[in-house]
Length: 375
Image (cartoon, rainbow, N blue to C red; front, side, top):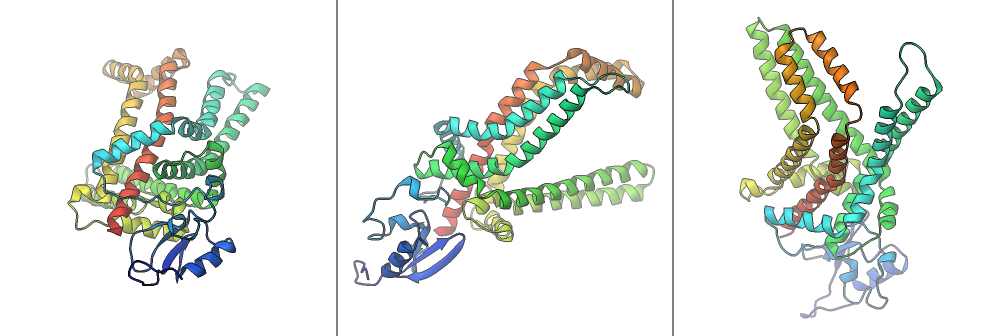
């Protein structure tokens, strides 16, 4: 057994695949290591302490044989030694993105290339007029559909890859893109299931809002229905906000903590609602909302810039055309005449290349919020 400075036996708790084991002394840990059950990158802490580190940092455990990056899994949250301000979180996000720019671009291409192929196929292979169907249009439609399926299939790998790569850069490592992808593929089923669940819930909330709009339109002359619609709108905003908080950190727990489906959602909710002793603007929930708002404002600016010419033309025609059907026809003809919009396409590509910044920021926020819980 190993003794600390006070002559007391050091017992450790280790976390492997989301489960904690121990307390265990150094002899037991060496047995687990020999059996391959304990790896250097597994999280570990003293049984009487709260600060998590890695098994590689346990004195006398892995010091005999040097630890190589190839032997250790890439997942697992790095150890943080200080709490960051919001500005420092944003600065750290930019630093990590700049340091591994090409790896993040490689991850973005997983979902960007299928989308680009689908868009270009739709633009340059126009369907024939009338009821005639040729082979080219059928092939184009089939190819676009396959690219859409590929885009969906690559999305979980893209999400998991951002978590793993960000955590590794924060840990001070420089993993290759292939190593990150190999590790990210392991999380595909769990991330895909969670992403589908989150998407379906948001879709139901959107449909709920559409139903509220229909109620409002149908009861424009009925004050009671308008009051009911307003009450339902308040309920929708409350449900949307509550669900947003509950899934704020599901990606980090599913990948970095290797938590299962239900555990990811539960721990995400608990972490998002933590920090009640902090000022409101320093709590994980509000910091996450600020980060998401900054990104959505950026995306909105990109979209408006890409569609500015079309929007300006729409408002000009709206002032001169009273017939909605004629207005819609004019807009469709103008869009077809304009052809492929290169500036809008370029801005869309830029948005996708910069999109990993949002995932990086939430990983950094997650590490910062976890540090608060460990203090």
